[in-house]
Length: 351
Image (cartoon, rainbow, N blue to C red; front, side):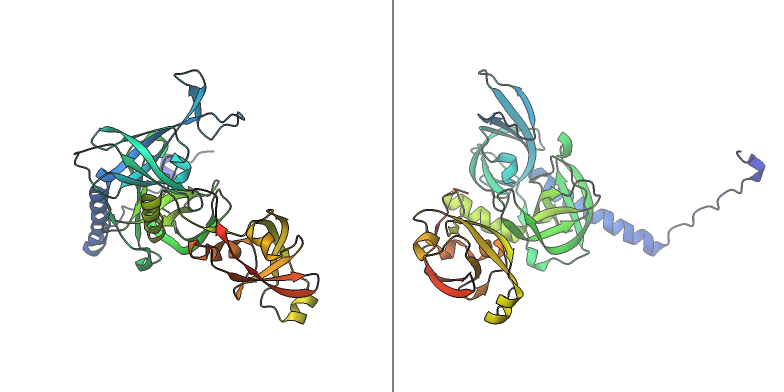
Protein backbone atom coordinates (compact mmCIF):
# COMPACT_ATOMS: atom_id res chain seq x y z
CA UNK A 1 0.00 0.00 0.00
CA UNK A 2 1.42 3.39 -1.02
CA UNK A 3 1.92 6.02 1.70
CA UNK A 4 -0.26 9.15 1.69
CA UNK A 5 1.42 12.42 0.66
CA UNK A 6 1.17 13.77 4.22
CA UNK A 7 3.17 10.75 5.42
CA UNK A 8 6.17 11.55 3.23
CA UNK A 9 9.08 13.61 4.50
CA UNK A 10 10.58 15.74 1.72
CA UNK A 11 14.29 15.33 1.15
CA UNK A 12 16.40 18.21 2.41
CA UNK A 13 17.92 20.38 -0.31
CA UNK A 14 21.37 19.32 -1.49
CA UNK A 15 24.14 21.43 -0.01
CA UNK A 16 25.76 23.83 -2.41
CA UNK A 17 29.18 22.83 -3.65
CA UNK A 18 32.01 24.60 -1.88
CA UNK A 19 34.27 26.85 -3.94
CA UNK A 20 37.03 24.22 -3.69
CA UNK A 21 34.74 21.42 -4.89
CA UNK A 22 33.49 23.55 -7.77
CA UNK A 23 37.06 24.36 -8.76
CA UNK A 24 37.97 20.66 -8.75
CA UNK A 25 35.04 19.77 -11.00
CA UNK A 26 35.82 22.69 -13.30
CA UNK A 27 39.45 21.57 -13.56
CA UNK A 28 38.38 18.01 -14.42
CA UNK A 29 35.91 19.20 -17.05
CA UNK A 30 38.42 21.60 -18.53
CA UNK A 31 41.02 18.84 -18.79
CA UNK A 32 38.63 16.53 -20.65
CA UNK A 33 37.41 19.32 -22.93
CA UNK A 34 40.94 20.51 -23.67
CA UNK A 35 42.22 17.00 -24.45
CA UNK A 36 39.23 16.33 -26.68
CA UNK A 37 39.64 19.56 -28.63
CA UNK A 38 43.31 18.83 -29.25
CA UNK A 39 42.90 15.23 -30.36
CA UNK A 40 39.48 14.76 -31.97
CA UNK A 41 40.32 16.49 -35.29
CA UNK A 42 42.96 13.77 -35.90
CA UNK A 43 40.63 10.86 -35.06
CA UNK A 44 39.19 9.12 -38.12
CA UNK A 45 36.35 6.71 -38.71
CA UNK A 46 37.57 3.75 -40.79
CA UNK A 47 35.13 1.89 -43.04
CA UNK A 48 36.61 -1.36 -44.34
CA UNK A 49 35.56 -3.98 -46.87
CA UNK A 50 36.76 -7.59 -46.81
CA UNK A 51 36.09 -10.31 -49.33
CA UNK A 52 34.09 -13.21 -47.94
CA UNK A 53 36.59 -16.03 -47.19
CA UNK A 54 36.33 -19.03 -49.57
CA UNK A 55 35.41 -21.26 -46.63
CA UNK A 56 32.29 -19.17 -46.11
CA UNK A 57 33.26 -18.37 -42.53
CA UNK A 58 32.24 -14.83 -41.83
CA UNK A 59 34.02 -12.26 -39.78
CA UNK A 60 32.18 -10.48 -37.01
CA UNK A 61 30.81 -7.92 -39.40
CA UNK A 62 27.81 -7.32 -41.62
CA UNK A 63 27.76 -9.26 -44.94
CA UNK A 64 26.33 -7.28 -47.85
CA UNK A 65 26.02 -8.01 -51.58
CA UNK A 66 29.20 -7.00 -53.39
CA UNK A 67 29.21 -4.95 -56.59
CA UNK A 68 30.74 -7.79 -58.59
CA UNK A 69 28.62 -10.65 -57.28
CA UNK A 70 30.40 -12.28 -54.29
CA UNK A 71 29.51 -11.15 -50.81
CA UNK A 72 31.54 -8.50 -49.09
CA UNK A 73 32.08 -8.14 -45.37
CA UNK A 74 31.88 -4.58 -44.14
CA UNK A 75 33.27 -3.39 -40.84
CA UNK A 76 34.22 -0.19 -39.08
CA UNK A 77 36.64 1.04 -36.48
CA UNK A 78 38.67 4.03 -35.42
CA UNK A 79 42.17 5.33 -35.97
CA UNK A 80 44.21 8.48 -35.51
CA UNK A 81 46.59 10.46 -37.74
CA UNK A 82 50.05 10.62 -36.18
CA UNK A 83 52.15 12.09 -39.01
CA UNK A 84 51.47 15.14 -41.24
CA UNK A 85 51.77 12.98 -44.38
CA UNK A 86 48.76 10.90 -43.42
CA UNK A 87 49.92 7.79 -41.55
CA UNK A 88 47.15 6.45 -39.29
CA UNK A 89 47.50 4.06 -36.35
CA UNK A 90 44.69 1.58 -35.75
CA UNK A 91 44.09 -2.07 -34.84
CA UNK A 92 45.10 -5.05 -36.95
CA UNK A 93 41.70 -6.65 -36.37
CA UNK A 94 40.06 -3.58 -37.92
CA UNK A 95 41.99 -3.33 -41.21
CA UNK A 96 44.04 -6.52 -41.56
CA UNK A 97 43.34 -8.16 -44.94
CA UNK A 98 40.93 -5.42 -46.03
CA UNK A 99 40.33 -4.97 -49.76
CA UNK A 100 39.16 -1.40 -49.39
CA UNK A 101 39.58 1.18 -46.64
CA UNK A 102 37.97 4.62 -46.45
CA UNK A 103 38.55 7.18 -43.73
CA UNK A 104 36.14 9.90 -42.65
CA UNK A 105 37.62 12.89 -40.84
CA UNK A 106 35.76 14.99 -38.30
CA UNK A 107 35.59 17.85 -40.82
CA UNK A 108 33.55 15.60 -43.11
CA UNK A 109 36.24 14.72 -45.64
CA UNK A 110 36.21 11.18 -47.05
CA UNK A 111 39.64 9.85 -48.04
CA UNK A 112 40.72 6.53 -49.47
CA UNK A 113 43.40 4.74 -47.48
CA UNK A 114 45.88 1.94 -48.14
CA UNK A 115 47.20 -0.63 -45.71
CA UNK A 116 50.90 -0.06 -45.00
CA UNK A 117 51.27 -3.08 -42.72
CA UNK A 118 49.66 -4.85 -39.81
CA UNK A 119 51.00 -6.85 -36.88
CA UNK A 120 48.45 -9.37 -35.56
CA UNK A 121 50.79 -10.25 -32.67
CA UNK A 122 50.25 -6.78 -31.13
CA UNK A 123 46.90 -6.04 -32.83
CA UNK A 124 48.35 -2.90 -34.41
CA UNK A 125 48.27 -1.64 -37.97
CA UNK A 126 49.23 1.42 -39.99
CA UNK A 127 47.25 2.77 -42.96
CA UNK A 128 48.04 5.80 -45.07
CA UNK A 129 45.50 8.35 -46.22
CA UNK A 130 45.56 9.29 -49.89
CA UNK A 131 45.56 13.04 -49.34
CA UNK A 132 48.28 14.78 -51.32
CA UNK A 133 48.83 18.43 -50.40
CA UNK A 134 46.00 18.24 -47.87
CA UNK A 135 46.33 19.78 -44.44
CA UNK A 136 45.91 16.94 -41.97
CA UNK A 137 45.61 17.33 -38.20
CA UNK A 138 47.85 15.08 -36.10
CA UNK A 139 48.04 13.84 -32.53
CA UNK A 140 50.96 14.08 -30.14
CA UNK A 141 52.36 10.74 -29.00
CA UNK A 142 53.14 10.57 -25.29
CA UNK A 143 55.04 7.97 -23.29
CA UNK A 144 53.61 5.00 -21.43
CA UNK A 145 56.66 4.97 -19.12
CA UNK A 146 55.32 8.06 -17.37
CA UNK A 147 51.84 6.72 -16.67
CA UNK A 148 50.45 6.49 -13.14
CA UNK A 149 47.51 4.44 -11.92
CA UNK A 150 44.60 6.76 -11.21
CA UNK A 151 45.49 9.47 -13.71
CA UNK A 152 42.91 10.82 -16.14
CA UNK A 153 42.34 8.83 -19.34
CA UNK A 154 40.14 10.00 -22.22
CA UNK A 155 39.06 7.64 -25.02
CA UNK A 156 37.97 9.03 -28.39
CA UNK A 157 36.50 6.95 -31.19
CA UNK A 158 33.46 5.93 -33.16
CA UNK A 159 31.55 3.37 -31.04
CA UNK A 160 28.68 1.75 -32.92
CA UNK A 161 29.12 4.31 -35.69
CA UNK A 162 28.62 7.38 -33.48
CA UNK A 163 31.48 9.47 -34.77
CA UNK A 164 33.88 11.25 -32.41
CA UNK A 165 32.43 9.98 -29.16
CA UNK A 166 34.35 10.87 -25.98
CA UNK A 167 34.45 8.92 -22.72
CA UNK A 168 36.59 9.65 -19.69
CA UNK A 169 37.91 7.62 -16.78
CA UNK A 170 41.21 6.76 -15.20
CA UNK A 171 44.14 4.47 -15.80
CA UNK A 172 43.01 1.46 -13.77
CA UNK A 173 46.19 -0.63 -13.97
CA UNK A 174 49.50 -0.86 -15.82
CA UNK A 175 51.56 -3.75 -17.13
CA UNK A 176 48.63 -5.99 -17.95
CA UNK A 177 49.03 -8.82 -20.46
CA UNK A 178 46.52 -9.56 -23.21
CA UNK A 179 46.46 -12.47 -25.64
CA UNK A 180 46.32 -11.42 -29.27
CA UNK A 181 44.35 -13.26 -31.92
CA UNK A 182 47.59 -14.82 -33.15
CA UNK A 183 48.06 -16.48 -29.77
CA UNK A 184 51.01 -14.37 -28.64
CA UNK A 185 50.88 -12.35 -25.45
CA UNK A 186 50.85 -8.55 -25.71
CA UNK A 187 52.77 -7.15 -22.75
CA UNK A 188 52.58 -3.74 -21.07
CA UNK A 189 48.87 -3.25 -21.79
CA UNK A 190 47.08 -0.29 -20.17
CA UNK A 191 43.81 -1.01 -18.37
CA UNK A 192 41.24 1.79 -18.15
CA UNK A 193 37.65 2.28 -17.10
CA UNK A 194 36.96 4.82 -19.87
CA UNK A 195 33.98 3.17 -21.56
CA UNK A 196 34.70 1.43 -24.88
CA UNK A 197 32.29 -0.21 -27.31
CA UNK A 198 32.55 -1.90 -30.72
CA UNK A 199 33.87 0.72 -33.12
CA UNK A 200 36.22 2.25 -30.54
CA UNK A 201 38.90 -0.21 -31.66
CA UNK A 202 41.97 1.62 -32.94
CA UNK A 203 41.06 4.97 -31.40
CA UNK A 204 43.38 6.88 -29.07
CA UNK A 205 43.50 6.83 -25.30
CA UNK A 206 44.92 10.19 -24.20
CA UNK A 207 46.02 11.93 -21.03
CA UNK A 208 44.95 15.31 -19.66
CA UNK A 209 47.41 17.10 -21.97
CA UNK A 210 45.94 15.41 -25.03
CA UNK A 211 48.99 13.19 -25.59
CA UNK A 212 48.24 9.66 -26.80
CA UNK A 213 49.06 7.05 -24.16
CA UNK A 214 47.51 4.00 -25.81
CA UNK A 215 45.60 2.48 -28.73
CA UNK A 216 42.18 1.21 -27.63
CA UNK A 217 41.89 -2.46 -28.50
CA UNK A 218 39.64 -4.64 -26.36
CA UNK A 219 37.00 -5.00 -23.69
CA UNK A 220 35.96 -7.94 -21.53
CA UNK A 221 32.40 -8.78 -22.47
CA UNK A 222 29.88 -8.93 -19.67
CA UNK A 223 31.83 -6.49 -17.50
CA UNK A 224 31.73 -2.77 -16.98
CA UNK A 225 34.81 -0.61 -16.81
CA UNK A 226 37.43 -3.19 -17.81
CA UNK A 227 38.92 -1.99 -21.08
CA UNK A 228 42.39 -2.27 -22.57
CA UNK A 229 44.73 -0.22 -24.76
CA UNK A 230 48.07 -1.11 -26.33
CA UNK A 231 50.68 1.11 -24.65
CA UNK A 232 51.90 3.94 -26.86
CA UNK A 233 55.56 2.90 -26.49
CA UNK A 234 54.69 -0.48 -28.03
CA UNK A 235 52.63 1.27 -30.71
CA UNK A 236 55.51 3.56 -31.70
CA UNK A 237 57.93 0.63 -31.93
CA UNK A 238 55.56 -1.39 -34.12
CA UNK A 239 54.50 1.59 -36.27
CA UNK A 240 58.11 2.48 -37.05
CA UNK A 241 58.79 -1.02 -38.35
CA UNK A 242 55.54 -1.26 -40.26
CA UNK A 243 56.29 2.00 -42.07
CA UNK A 244 59.89 0.99 -42.76
CA UNK A 245 59.41 -2.67 -43.68
CA UNK A 246 55.67 -3.35 -43.78
CA UNK A 247 56.04 -5.95 -41.04
CA UNK A 248 57.60 -6.70 -37.66
CA UNK A 249 60.36 -9.31 -37.76
CA UNK A 250 60.26 -12.14 -35.22
CA UNK A 251 62.13 -15.40 -34.84
CA UNK A 252 60.75 -18.93 -34.65
CA UNK A 253 62.02 -22.39 -33.73
CA UNK A 254 59.73 -24.38 -35.98
CA UNK A 255 57.85 -26.37 -33.38
CA UNK A 256 54.45 -26.71 -31.81
CA UNK A 257 53.94 -27.25 -28.12
CA UNK A 258 51.88 -26.77 -25.01
CA UNK A 259 52.50 -25.90 -21.38
CA UNK A 260 53.29 -28.87 -19.14
CA UNK A 261 53.97 -29.19 -15.39
CA UNK A 262 57.27 -30.91 -14.60
CA UNK A 263 57.37 -33.68 -12.01
CA UNK A 264 58.68 -32.51 -8.64
CA UNK A 265 61.31 -35.25 -8.56
CA UNK A 266 62.77 -33.93 -11.83
CA UNK A 267 62.66 -30.33 -10.59
CA UNK A 268 64.53 -31.26 -7.39
CA UNK A 269 66.99 -33.58 -9.11
CA UNK A 270 68.13 -30.95 -11.61
CA UNK A 271 67.64 -27.95 -9.32
CA UNK A 272 65.33 -26.27 -11.85
CA UNK A 273 64.08 -22.73 -11.35
CA UNK A 274 60.78 -23.54 -13.11
CA UNK A 275 58.14 -26.14 -12.34
CA UNK A 276 56.69 -26.19 -15.87
CA UNK A 277 57.91 -25.95 -19.43
CA UNK A 278 56.91 -26.32 -23.08
CA UNK A 279 56.13 -29.86 -24.19
CA UNK A 280 57.15 -30.29 -27.85
CA UNK A 281 54.24 -31.84 -29.74
CA UNK A 282 55.32 -31.31 -33.35
CA UNK A 283 58.43 -30.32 -35.28
CA UNK A 284 58.74 -28.61 -38.64
CA UNK A 285 60.85 -30.88 -40.79
CA UNK A 286 64.19 -29.20 -41.43
CA UNK A 287 63.26 -26.32 -39.12
CA UNK A 288 65.59 -24.79 -36.51
CA UNK A 289 64.46 -27.08 -33.66
CA UNK A 290 64.60 -30.16 -35.88
CA UNK A 291 68.15 -29.33 -37.01
CA UNK A 292 69.17 -28.71 -33.40
CA UNK A 293 68.16 -32.25 -32.41
CA UNK A 294 64.99 -31.44 -30.52
CA UNK A 295 62.60 -34.40 -30.38
CA UNK A 296 58.89 -34.70 -29.84
CA UNK A 297 58.01 -35.08 -26.13
CA UNK A 298 61.06 -33.00 -25.11
CA UNK A 299 60.20 -30.32 -22.52
CA UNK A 300 61.82 -26.92 -23.08
CA UNK A 301 62.80 -25.26 -19.80
CA UNK A 302 65.29 -22.53 -20.78
CA UNK A 303 66.65 -20.51 -23.70
CA UNK A 304 70.15 -19.04 -23.32
CA UNK A 305 69.80 -19.42 -19.56
CA UNK A 306 66.45 -17.63 -19.36
CA UNK A 307 63.82 -19.81 -17.67
CA UNK A 308 60.97 -20.93 -19.92
CA UNK A 309 57.87 -21.83 -17.90
CA UNK A 310 55.48 -21.84 -20.85
CA UNK A 311 54.67 -20.83 -24.40
CA UNK A 312 54.42 -17.14 -23.53
CA UNK A 313 57.96 -17.08 -22.11
CA UNK A 314 59.24 -18.71 -25.29
CA UNK A 315 57.46 -16.11 -27.45
CA UNK A 316 58.99 -13.28 -25.43
CA UNK A 317 62.58 -14.39 -26.04
CA UNK A 318 62.06 -14.97 -29.77
CA UNK A 319 62.39 -11.39 -30.97
CA UNK A 320 63.89 -10.02 -34.18
CA UNK A 321 67.33 -9.89 -32.55
CA UNK A 322 67.38 -13.71 -32.34
CA UNK A 323 67.02 -14.33 -36.10
CA UNK A 324 70.10 -16.26 -37.25
CA UNK A 325 71.81 -15.98 -33.85
CA UNK A 326 72.79 -19.32 -32.24
CA UNK A 327 71.39 -19.92 -28.80
CA UNK A 328 71.24 -22.68 -26.20
CA UNK A 329 67.94 -24.47 -25.82
CA UNK A 330 67.72 -26.46 -22.58
CA UNK A 331 65.30 -29.40 -22.61
CA UNK A 332 64.30 -32.28 -20.37
CA UNK A 333 64.23 -35.59 -22.26
CA UNK A 334 62.74 -38.24 -20.03
CA UNK A 335 64.77 -37.53 -16.87
CA UNK A 336 67.87 -36.16 -18.61
CA UNK A 337 68.68 -32.45 -19.02
CA UNK A 338 70.24 -31.52 -22.37
CA UNK A 339 71.64 -28.31 -23.87
CA UNK A 340 71.08 -28.04 -27.62
CA UNK A 341 72.40 -25.34 -29.94
CA UNK A 342 69.62 -23.83 -32.04
CA UNK A 343 69.60 -21.07 -34.66
CA UNK A 344 66.16 -19.40 -34.79
CA UNK A 345 64.79 -18.51 -38.23
CA UNK A 346 62.68 -15.55 -39.26
CA UNK A 347 58.94 -16.00 -38.96
CA UNK A 348 57.23 -16.63 -42.26
CA UNK A 349 54.25 -14.53 -41.11
CA UNK A 350 54.51 -11.16 -42.77
CA UNK A 351 53.06 -9.47 -39.73
